[in-house]
Image 1 (cartoon, one colour):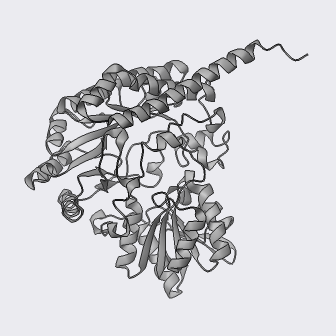
Image 2 (spheres, helix red, strand yellow):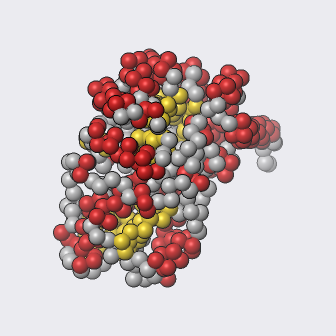
Length: 493
């Protein structure tokens, strides 16, 4: 059976066009895993990345028509729902025989709705590899879909949810991603300039799952426990792809890596033993309570060049309310350990967490500066479906405004572009702090000098970023002027 696996775009520009250029698209590893499983099962697969290929919905349908696919599978995140619904309407009109399959987080959470409204024919819930393969096998053979664990579907107009499928116990049993289905060196995959990476970073998976229960995250709704691959097999995969494609960077797609100091040393030692630390650099994300000086130095020796930390807040009370289970002291210790090892630090911070106020949001901005991160992202807190925060707020937000489920910085956004703000704050205040915080962090002379002398940001990108930040600052000024003028207007008699 011929199947198209699709990475859909979003109908709206949820990131400002200027800022988007600093965050090129990432290689679609999850879809490449699905493609590998289907190919191993004897099916034909094409992978269509609508974003990387810059395809309109009409263009996408024409590709499906040309390839004569029997099924189209969409990876569905909340921000892409509107665009996918538009695309499905075109497919229903022009290719009525094509079966529509959806998976990923949004589809899993809202399988009932997506099937009831006709958006999909089949929903693959949770971990997709085995469920998708058995679904395509059943469609190809005309056999009973009711036997496929993890599948939701319709029979005689009634939505049926088959029993949940257990997660894959041995992740090393899953075929490696089918990267031959992807144009790996497409221009959209080439750089991550906002963290100083100027070569295509290969995504690698060493684990799935997360045991933490942060109020803003929905990951543990699917994978509550951590499953690890064998370290040697992860390094085997890295080495094979470096040899085959000449990658200069790779990055972990896990919630965190390494999970333990022992795992970190095993991985670093294996990279060094094979001499891979001389051929490739890598990126990872960790928690502030998972690293120390000894580990950071060894990881740096093995090629670690960039580390992400979810610092989240500069206010301990807000951190506690978010369920992060870390402290500001741990954050400072982790940042110092990374800097001493010579690893570039990207700090993730959240504005508008439960309990946030104007003062605590500014605590966060100032904490980012005190940590002396090389890069920082100040994200607006979004109540993502499946998270505890969504459950708390779902009755007071419009969850059908799919494009608003994004935390990306958007200098051009208006006050209407956010779903909500914490109690006691307004949306304009939250957006204003985000814009002002970005400017305050990046406009410091020490930051400019650091990136110029280290070469972590090219002068052209620095100038480009400065334009984006100044436009955001101008929007703040205009907003304040309008507010001041409006407050002076006489009341209407």
